[in-house]
Image 1: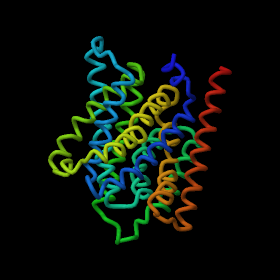
Image 2: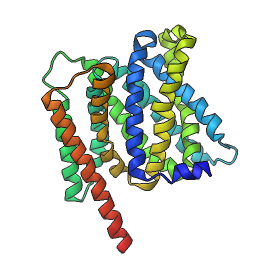
Image 3: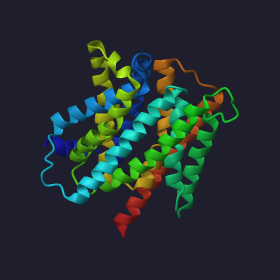
Image 4: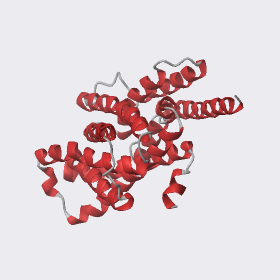
Length: 290
């Protein structure tokens, strides 16, 4: 009954709650970076999230077909790569900028093959906002961090596509849980290789638990619910709220102050996201009438 109530959450609120959760978790993660580094912090997050989800969902894997195993494995591996690369990026550049650059991947997905003028308009507005947030002319930015953020965006596209596919093949809770274990397989070897995971202390486990809930267990479950109810392209444009949430989270928790242009960028991104949401509702209403 509890899982049914969770599954009944509407798609748009699920995405919004997911965004807030992720960016709050990202602020916590940046606080751990000086001790564990980006890769070990990512490993702490993913492994703990996998254990939490396993205890909550207790997935039955005996009846999974070969096709389901293959799809959920690709989903999890993509998820793991996306997370570790993104943490490596925001260890070098501000959180808001990292998310803005990462979002270029889903934005390209949103634009690809679109046949509706309104969809293109919302994507263009989101792109304009990202252009204002991302100061390409600033040579003082860490180039490696920017490239890593762009690479994380490529993995994000894969996560959206694979998430949409796996959500139609099995229960969302089961898919996320199994996917997180495959993600752990990506991240743990990297974390062990950098050696900083040996700095993990019991005092950091509480922060790690909060990080796992906010950045992985909660948002990925909510996103799986949303991906079952809305198209991947609509999901991608809705996720344009990520840079805005990241910038606000950075301001509140990390004291990363914003310029006037960055606030304007946030406004454009929010307008694009609201427009995409209204457009999605309009299309659903037309489909219902037909």
